[in-house]
Structure formats: structure tokens, C-alpha cells
Image 1 (cartoon, rainbow, N blue to C red):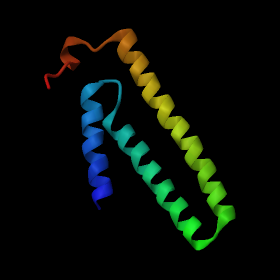
Image 2 (image 1 turned 30 degrees about the vertical axis):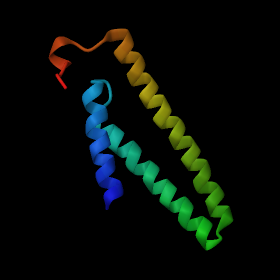
Image 3 (image 1 turned 120 degrees about the vertical axis):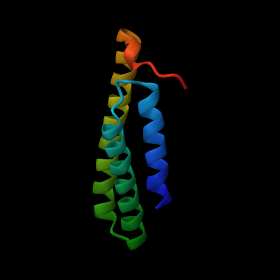
Image 4 (image 1 turned 45 degrees about the vertical axis):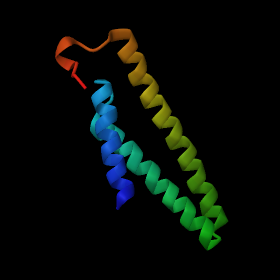
Length: 90
């Protein structure tokens, strides 16, 4: 599925620009986001509005987790900076 290939490409890029963002963690965050979004679409189309509300709540909580993870990685990058062995040339 192209959605997951796109996630793979973005994950590799994100992990390459900041050593504090782990590729596996980012991949899991993106995959879970896609899963919740697809579930939300499915429940909306099927008319299961109660389940849709539950999935939307989980999606909101998950996007908060994504924001927290990226903010912490950005803070670590700015506060500590990468060491010379973590720097890569692009």
C-alpha cells in the first residue's frame, strides 16, 4: 500500500535529520495514526457514530503523543546537540 511506503520514506528522513528521533518509534506513531484514521473513516461510512466518537478520542490522544515525542526530540536536539559521530552529511 502506497500509504505505508510513504510512511517508510518519511520515517527514514525524519530519523536522519535528528538523532533523538528513533526510526522505529516514529514508524509506529505514523502507522498507528494511519490505522486510527482508516478506522474513523470506516465507522463514519458505516454509520456507527458511537464507535466513531471513541476512535476520534483515541486519535486525538495519539496526536498529542506524536506532538510530545517530536517536541521532546527537538528540545533534546537544541539543548544537547548531536555529537560528531551522530552527524551525517546530507
